[in-house]
Length: 129
Image 1 (cartoon, rainbow, N blue to C red):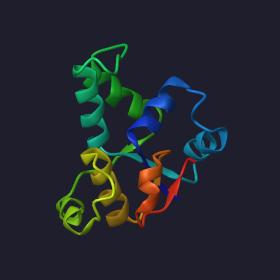
Image 2: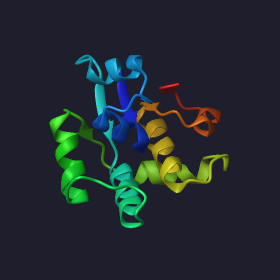
Image 3: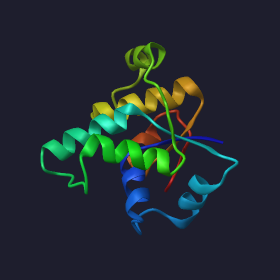
Image 4: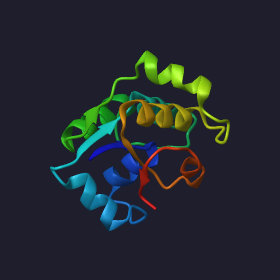
């Protein structure tokens, strides 16, 4: 299974947060699955850090990238095909970061790992609930 992490899932995974279901954590650790993080999530986390909403233990950009690599999570490039998908995406969700992640998941045939209920209204496969 090809899994694309929503930003909060990545951060919960790093922190060992109890909000991340054990079943979801197991899927992220299963070597059969390919786990990806979008630069969109890095962008979102950096913005929240700069706004003081997301404290991080080290220089944010380096910390997040190091943790991604440390946990064996691949980076998924943000490509033009995914961005073009925004035009046909229904306006059910206002968060631009989540909308881009939905587009990437749709374009690349991935399962989006999230607990955001608004995302479930889109025709994208999700897990994490």
